[in-house]
Image (cartoon, rainbow, N blue to C red; front, side):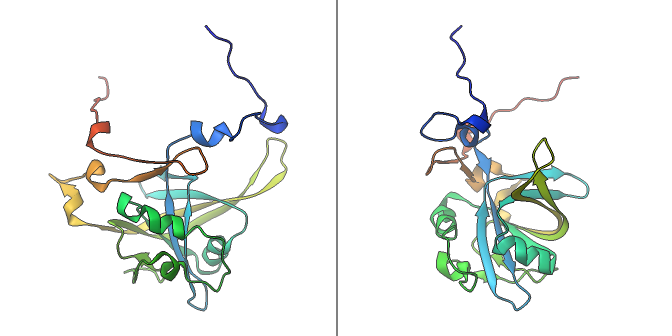
Amino acid sequence: MPEMYFYEPAKGHGLAHDPFHAIVGPRPIAWVGTQDERGVRNLAPYSFFTALNFNPPLIGFSSLGYKDTLRNIDQTREFTWNLVSRDLAEAMNQSSAMVGSEVDEFVLAGVTPAASRTISAPRVAESKVSFECKLAQIVRLHTSEGQAVDAWWVVGEVVAVHIDPSLVQNGSFDTAAANIVLRGGGPADYFSIGAEQLFKMPRPG
């Protein structure tokens, strides 16, 4: 077998782009809607995101830096998660622009803020799935040696769910039909999921 490419992250990877982002992926995107205590809206994508628990349903994302989204969640203890489908990819990308806290990224991205049912944070009306979330935890991340890093893990409990009825087929959510966008590893790499990626594998026993 060929010798493995080896590196220690603290000493650099020696490649044009950090492979860590590409290896752990493609990753689902947390398109997070918030507002501050004055009602100023914010919308931003985060690609370090995953589901954490079934009952109660918990989701989590990592904020690299104490950004407007994190500050708003810290203040109001709520946020929305909005699914990014292929038709919303460009809007999601627009909302990632580095702009001042006074800028409404819903307007910047050209999407419609929609009222949530159980919380005050806005959701994306064009998104085919949205979660209304209440803050469960904010955890500052640390190294193996206990040194704090400039990143925070945000855990939210999903308290309400909005699903486009076209995505519910035979009592199940149709993941392929949702055409979900995932973040890849390069500076501009994304992927989408379609029916051609589907295979079934029942659990043993």
